[in-house]
Structures are given as structure tokens and as C-alpha cells.
Image (cartoon, rainbow, N blue to C red; front, side, top):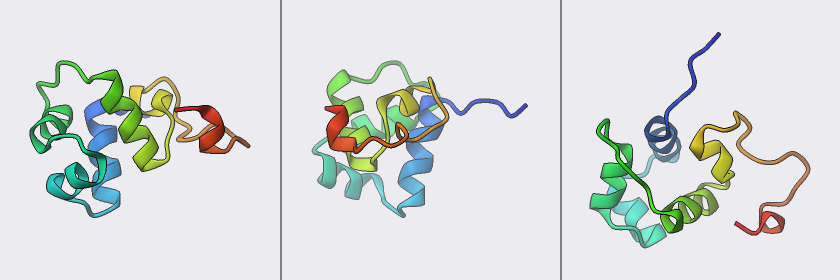
Length: 85
């Protein structure tokens, strides 16, 4: 059984998959570069609900995926807009 990815690992993987720097992600989401860096750091403490929703919307994944509650990036057969993220 494969170990689950942490929130930090999921956020970094999604950013790296899109070849984005923290600066570029900050410009796209309106979340500060320093906050984004902290969210990906090993000593991660907390992520604001606003940031969680903004990152989920930007990446096109569910907040449940970011939180590690599911391995599915999206809810099956549901448009992201219909999820009211």
C-alpha cells in the first residue's frame, strides 16, 4: 500500500506539474508567495480556508483531494463549478 501524500506534497506536486514558480502561482491566485511557500514547507502549520478554496479552484481539484481525504482529484461526473468551491 502506497503512503498518502501530505497536503504539502499535494500542493507542491500540483504546482510542479504545471511548471509554475511560487511567484507565478502567487500572481495567478492572489495568495502571497510567502504563504504559498509555507503551505509547501515541511513545517506547515495551517492553511486558511480561503487559500484552500482558491488553490482547489486554480488547480481544478477538490478540497477533499488537497486535504488528503480522497485520492480522486475531482468528484466523478461533476463539473467543478457545480461543486460551489
